Image (cartoon, rainbow, N blue to C red; front, side, top):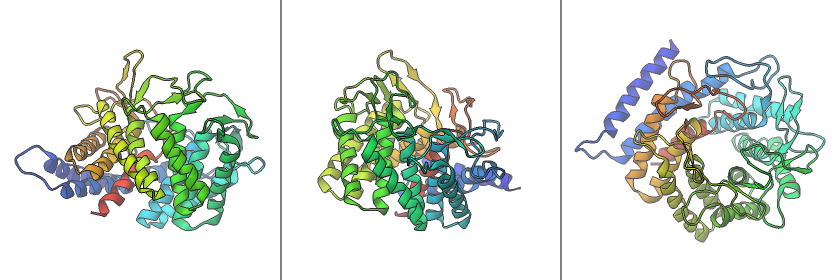
Amino acid sequence: MKKYLFVAITVLISSNLYSIDRQDSVKVDPKLRMNQLKNEVFINLTKNLLPYWSTRMIDNQNSGFYGRINVNNQVFSEEDKGGILNARILWTYSSAYRILKDTVYLRLATRSKNYIMSHFIDKKYGGAYRSVKSDGEPSDTRKQTYTQSFFIYGLSEYYRATGDKEALSAAKKIFDLFDKYALDNNSDGYFEVFTRDWHRSHDMLIGESTISDEKTMNTHLHIMEAYTNLYRVWPDKRVADRLKDLVEIFLDKIIDPKTSHLICFMDKNWKRTSAVDSYGHDIESSWLMVEAAGLLGDPFLLAKVKGTSIKIANAAAEGIQSDGSLIYDKDLSTGRINTERSWWAQAETIIGYLNTYELTGNEKYLDNSINCWNYTKNHLVDNKTGGWFSSVSESGVVGGGDKGGFWVCPYHNGRMCMEIIERISGY
């Protein structure tokens, strides 16, 4: 009965948003459009996305959460449990409790935090494992900077929601380990992969092509995101300095000054080693940079970041299609265009262009946000069995990717919903 009620409510509100978004002679108040958007994503978050993960992904045998569920909602109970997945689950339910005040989310956040502290945190060498087995024993014990950043992000959010000092202490310790081992003291920025005991290796884990790809845009983006959240709850000068440095790295080294696209891979000295424009990362960075600079309280830096953010959003718009969706990326060296519509890129598009609308007041950016949501709810949200599909093709065919797994988590889409709710509640 609940499933049918959810579908009926979704259809009703979807039709309302369509009716106020159609092109006609009546100019619709942007506040009305945004409130309709907020209502829709609120229902999706609370009636679909969070319940899907809380009912299908809880591992009652081994504790924590399962490591994988496929597109047909089949749970793989023996699959390894990824650190990225678990840290993002912690962030999602912590944030949901902080914003929505539902103790169901608090219980799930606490379950996640306890599992992480018991099974992922390396009590001998510090930091967190990249993955554990289904029974909680260490599996991939490498210390990947990308993965570690999400533990800072999730643990600091749990502290933000609950005041739990153990979580904050664990986040601080990873921050200290980054300074000790991951930071490049010669050329700035952070290296990517280390052994369990923090000796650097050159393993390629997030799309690197050669060992020359030593600095990755993706990792620096998520360290910036993590340090932003850590600084919210621990306004230490060291965190402020590192966060400001990361913002300036984006401004000076990662953003292509000619195109305003992000450079995905660089060598140790920040020389470009890739020729791919990743539209989803472009638009994601556009709003995360503004968030980081806004917390630092430097008006000159913030003004520069806001101007750059708008340029990035305009560059990312090259990937927006007539149906409102955002394609994945373009290889400039070959001309190959990846037309996949990924769940995470659509979620970041919805937030990113709402952010650009807030910066400019130009309704074309609000159109981009709402149009992408309209595409997403019709193609990526599974209104029959719950959750989101991870990707669809150019023609709208659902891909074979998992609904939950090592990389597929309730974070990009959950965060999008909560960002929309928080931002629009202020109007």
